[in-house]
Length: 323
Image (cartoon, rainbow, N blue to C red):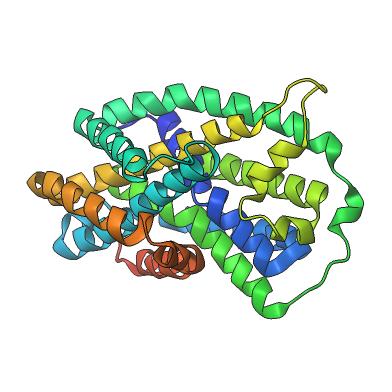
């Protein structure tokens, strides 16, 4: 049983992990300036759904064969996303001439070692890294907010189909990874999970406001990683530059902790078969996603729908009594 504090920390991280490199650019692309409203509605809807989900007990269900299959597929998908995102971040901005295998292999070795150490070690690591993450987030927000131009939020153009899609996508991106955490805990504290989720959503919402408020939706749409580009445009106190490196640290922390929790869920579901699954998964990830732009693009365009399926399944899972 992990403490309520760690549950909040992990919920904070898991609620954020799918936005940088995916969620933010996807939502801005679909709804432009109106994305501020769609994300706010999506986060509120996600809070309501998560409140309902934390009143259920998933532990016994995910010990059954159907439960193990469902959580393993979801966890594998999210680990795959984390590996792709880490590779793209590293290869596009830092290790341009480094072969992809030399980027993702250390990442998977780190994940494997963390899972081998167990959930208590992962919990302690999260308590350390959250201090770094929150400190950097606070510094970046101090940088962003004074540079916002209110005129960049107008005009507001409503497209009904994209409006609904953005709300649903926001909800799926922020809540579905937390289901993995719920599957691991025999007992969890609803207030702690919801508190972590709320602060995670607030941080993403402020990041989105900063991107549109500084760039405007049209310019933000031109960038695949608007949050990274934003940090290249501003300085703190007119002397602290290269703040995009701070963003990279935050993103790596989110990806690392999410991959650790997801991989640990796979280990719990597969037990002794975990090491074989790791080897097969690394090969699949490298040949079918890391080195294949079209398959990576599929992840970008369809993650919201895939996660929505798992979210719907979780909603309809029958409540189980804890032994």
